[in-house]
Image 1 (cartoon, one colour):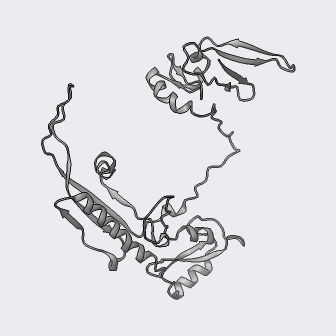
Image 2 (cartoon, helix red, strand yellow):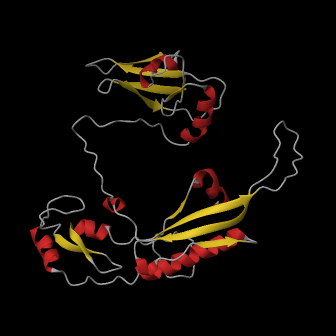
Length: 289
């Protein structure tokens, strides 16, 4: 037996009680109503959950409703896929903020700036014939096997640019992992130097003196968030006047070591290094995973 409650303020339904025995053959859904200005309450049986929560979907036909979150699904198969995950938790309700009471803000200012280093990679494969002895209508003709790869270090610093690394031969995935780790260590060593800021030119000094707003977040400087000189930690060049909060955000990101990580390298020397693939999710990532 499940109990729903109608909230007059939100004009919507919430799950007051959800039975832990959802696998039983018979389920009864009740709606709890209360009389205004009294303590009286009444239970009525819900004979059609689809009609009760029809306002939650733009679908005009019958729907299949999850008793945990009251979300209507168009097909029973979709509900069957959703229910085992949703039923693990207590009943949920989505509550949107009223207009004017909430402000959406963007805080990841560092995502607006290019990273100092990244790797662009690509796999090459061949398709040897495959013996498929399964008894089904679909037959596997061949499988993709990695035969080689190319990794290219991308950076705007000319002194750290290297030619593309190309490999084709036995055990390419091990070679790929070894090269990625090697590149990560070299780049971490470069980023860990933290070059001091070079002396400012006359124009740079004037640019910093006249700045009244942070060039990153565009907010005015304050006593608690003062103006500071943001510089390139690799070349030492002065970049622009930033607030203290943005200046800390724009520092090269260090890799956060997870619990149980048994790597021997010092965590303080590991920096975040993006590795990009063309059509990675559709092809290359399958070999990596």
